[in-house]
Image (cartoon, rainbow, N blue to C red; front, side):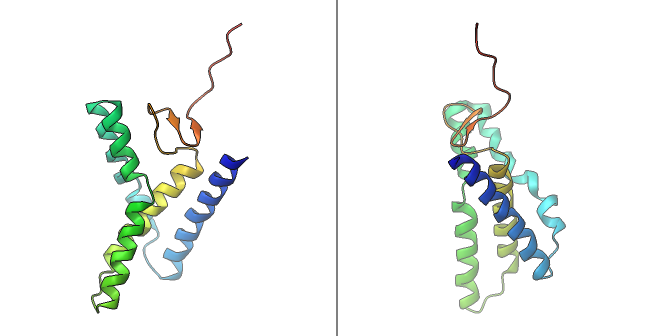
Length: 127
């Protein structure tokens, strides 16, 4: 039940980000155009499961988008217009939200094991 709630709330967050992009007259398609950029972090798996999980989790955590939007707001308060930074945060957050809504959570011991459960088809129980 908890996992279902997390997936639904992440879906709602993804929708909210799309609506925010539309409401602020930003190019909503940018969310889709940049969607796969965050997945470059999975290249860490070429160095092994431990490195892969670390790089994947760093890029698929809400910490990055939160820091980006916080920096944007600080710079706004300082009189600097850096809208691109808010767009980076939106695109990044959108990616994380969609992944979590689909059940792709933070990686544990290997790519299939996440904090939201196992990814992929369940193996049949042995008889």
